[in-house]
Image (cartoon, rainbow, N blue to C red; front, side):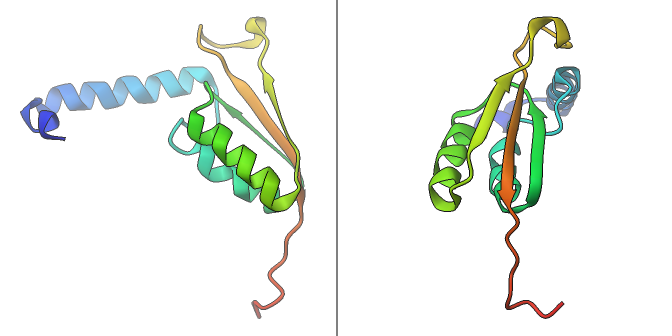
Length: 108
C-alpha cells in the first residue's frame, strides 16, 4: 500500500486503464475481482445462469466448490475455444442450473 503513495497519479491512471482494456478484450461479463462473488447468486437464481470470464482465480474455484457443497448445484466450467477468443488469454464460461431460492419470510 505504501508503494502506491510513491506512484504518480498518471501511472496509477494508466495501470487502471490498461486493466480495464484487458478485461474488455477478454469479452467477459465480470473481471477477476467479481467472478467469485457472482457464483452464489447463480446457484440461488431460478433457471440456467451463464457468465463469461477471463482466467479463473483461486477465489472463483473456491467459491464454486463451497457453493456446490451448500446448495447441491453443479457448475460446469468450459474453456472458450482458441478460435473464439478475443486475445491470447484464456476465457471461460461458468454455467449452472440454479435452485430458484425464494425467501419465504420477505413480504415484498
